[in-house]
Length: 215
Length: 240
Image 1 (tube, helix red, strand yellow):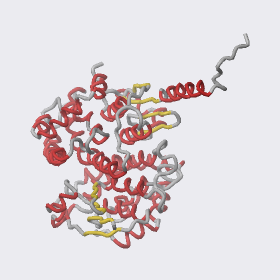
Image 2 (cartoon, each protein chain N blue to C red):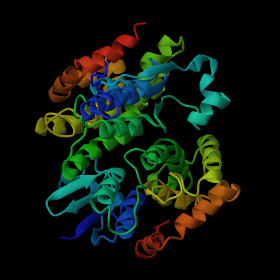
Image 3 (tube, rainbow over the protein chains, first blue to last red):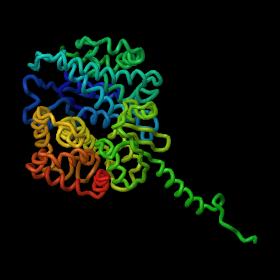
Image 4 (cartoon, chains in turn green, brown):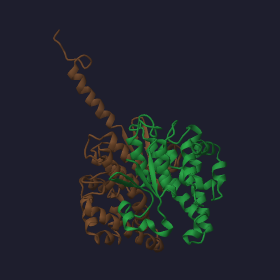
């Protein structure tokens, strides 16, 4: 049974796809055009009641929320492919801690930036310079803390690549591709080195090759 | 004078008893740094209460900026509360902390996670829903309508209007879910429900209560989780 991933063209779906590739799990994709409202169809809402992307189907079993999906597969296939938790992860769950940081500190200001710089016309909103500036400052402060963290740790959770690092790729990609905010990564020596390491992983390069960003 | 005396180092039964004592002492090594009013701190405290774990509470005075001092930033690089210390471990992010406690102390108190991986994943879906769909709306409403007045500040009605409608939409999904499932994560109370407690508790003293009351399954679920003894204990801390 092959895992079906809905909406591969969207950033959050890529969080799932890169994990499946790291874990060497076979999958297929189903295109869902959110700009045409396909995510609001009754059929899709049965899979994902909020009409968001992605959702996955694994036989009869369905899941949504990309961070829940990646945790499930990383745990289910712990001994296959790349180990994404670290040793003693039940006693020292730093991957989970930094996954929460990504979700609550990194993602929100970056998401707002991306909407105002890249997707404003598609979403029919006027880019608000004040909002862009505020969120750039917010994200900058977060990246300063990442800089500090990564000056003593190779990866966010420690000396191992984990779900926490992986989870930054999908939206982080826009900082250097389209949002015009490369400096936020490049001006920070350790963040920049970390970014190059994680974004050059074969799994992520495969994602970019198979499901290029549309902007 | 020469009668045999049970020694903790040679008597096996005595050694077992001492190990139990040792475990108890290790459990008391849990420390929480935070503030009783803080939503995120409460999320951790209610988890500890459900697991019947003792802990030392270290009060961090947000009003004087104690969370931004060099000493505290060593514990939490973002200068936020809460922080958990458990033996060698220092952990931040309330939902990472609660999940750690739920897994590490799985055999104590209320089970808050599911041992079956597929059931755990469903639970995980709904903890993400709380974190990504519910909280961004509900937290802002609680902050504007309840916390700001306590701090003597003015509610921004535009923010309230912006988030009220969105929360209503989220609660419609909750209503559908709770029609099919007694609790959000499945048949029993778990972290998926628990994570909501601090914000829902605040919202119950605001006009947003009406949004919960208008949805019968959501309303029943709120009444259920808010009356749990562990939550009552934590809510009582705010009265001091």
